[in-house]
Length: 102
Image 1 (cartoon, helix red, strand yellow):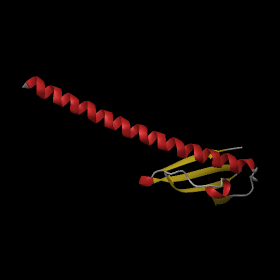
Image 2 (cartoon, rainbow, N blue to C red; image 1 turned 180 degrees about the horizontal axis):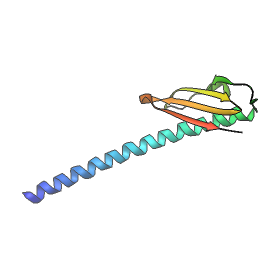
Image 3 (cartoon, rainbow, N blue to C red; image 1 turned 180 degrees about the vertical axis):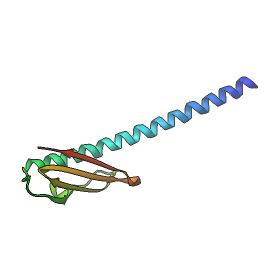
Image 4 (tube, rainbow, N blue to C red; image 1 turned 120 degrees about the vertical axis):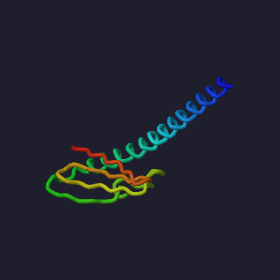
């Protein structure tokens, strides 16, 4: 009886850690897609060679036409001092920020 209880306990622990690993891997995969999109937007804005004397904010879809990634809820680009700072908001109140300088 004791051996069966121990096997059950170990099986529950293994399943728990496997599920945690799946959740972490899923969040990492989703975050990578959003970060790649933010990097493309920053590169597109910097390709226009913005003046270091002018700062502005625009929507990401103005810089890179097309839909946002499935995980993204909002996206904006802020250009200051010639650098592009892209902020992508995702579900759960999280956001990814990518900053690129020329």
